[in-house]
Image (cartoon, rainbow, N blue to C red; front, top):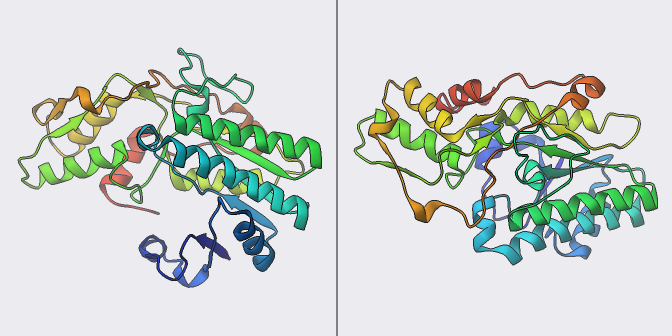
Length: 290
């Protein structure tokens, strides 16, 4: 198994160690925005399947670094597609899409045919990548699929992600910390799932006879306030005593509600999420990757 990093020799392998797969992954240096780097990495590894998950992945950070975000997402996808077109069209490619592409669904569950209305630089980059995959699949006959994933969480999340911020702050408070959890909007609605479930769905997408795009989600949405309340209740705490809202944490544009309809994945892949928000919170509190 091969994996890529911008600096395969100098990077930390902590997450690979936590997952118990460090010795199973051969790391190759690759800069996704550099075509020659991508071309050489794919030629060297000679893969049957590619799971392209690279790119700046924080919606919030994309407002601070819009150029870097869009560049990393669109050029990376384009370079992988073009390299496979030139090297081996039979390579099966999975590209990481995002529910952020849909924008605000206004209470309607999003499907694979729901129009995109991106509301962040991150979502614009992901939308562009989606259409690049669609174009290369149609124009060149590549086996390239996009998984349009709704929010997927695990203990491997960096602390800049709001779910990890909530979990870790609540755990410190439960252990005696006097700090306060600062958050932006609490009324936003999201569909939170368990990342290991979604990785299984990625693999299943590439086992289909033809390349297609799939919405991957739990089908259940909750407010961020629900997430905070459930987390603190799980630790025996009253959430309102330990949180406060701050306007400077509110994004220039934010999606109010995000709802999903993963029926195609259920019917065509035989896949459904094992955990919704409540199970995800317990797994993250327990730091349980199994």
